Image 1 (cartoon, rainbow, N blue to C red):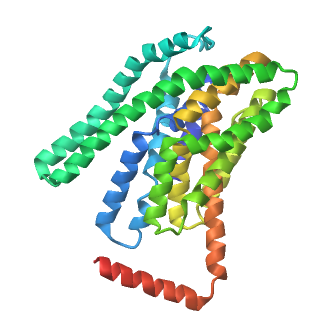
Image 2 (image 1 turned 90 degrees about the vertical axis):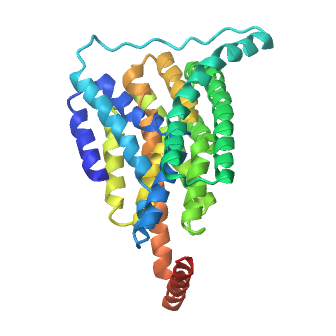
Image 3 (image 1 turned 90 degrees about the horizontal axis):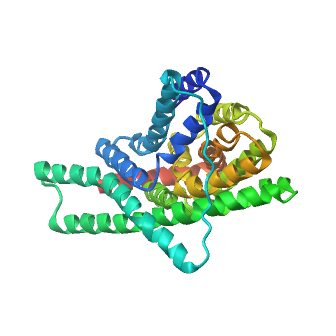
Length: 362
């Protein structure tokens, strides 16, 4: 499925204006955020658990990856059939604030807008759960209480989080990128971007959900620490490449086509579960922190250097979504090599133990 969809993506991208290509690839990353990822991942794990066969665990991952490809195809199709005027770009206006009262007023003014966004995102999920309960009556009273408290936490947390990153991080990222580009040492954008990317991914809410889910499903075989390290390295490399594009103006195809070719080739050599996790990680790593800080950072630097924002700055989210495919699958290769180095009697003992556990669960 992934190979077929990505072939379709690159074929369609050949027929759209250049301004649509980077935006289309970015859209695949930004649509898998802190609401989408937990629900879709839990849905996949739940459906796979019903099957109970040997491949169910491997197939529980990959839904987020498929959900990331859909928006890319949709925006590319929009670019093919859209007959509007030339694409334009409006610069981000950094507000001039004099004291903390004005800062607080900015957040208070924006908060209702993000409350409405979170409500519109949560209502369909709440309606789905309510209809399910009315028809099947599977949830007990305690479970319903937990679900209700969970929705409340999600509503409050996401409303505050999205207000903070959009009102605070977006102007800050744009301003920093602009100032570093104008400093006379624009090359510093590459190492600085890599450093920011390495640590920024740890603040993505959906990343922690994915890491915990992976550790739970694999019974600790793939630890949260190994996942986080792989994601941090991948995002650092992607931001470095994005800053290189801002400085040189090279086409996004020069990075995406080799990257996805390597990623899709690795799928034939790594354990299947790592492929699903890797492609899920790409969508998860490119969340609201990346969109509201790294993208404005890239846009500010591109504006200051006189580049084309639509073709050179956009695309950073796409690269953040691509590099985890490589690092997580390389982790899978390392895992496979370690398995080969293990003594056969140890592997046999592990297999015997796993059979006992499965029988006990049954």
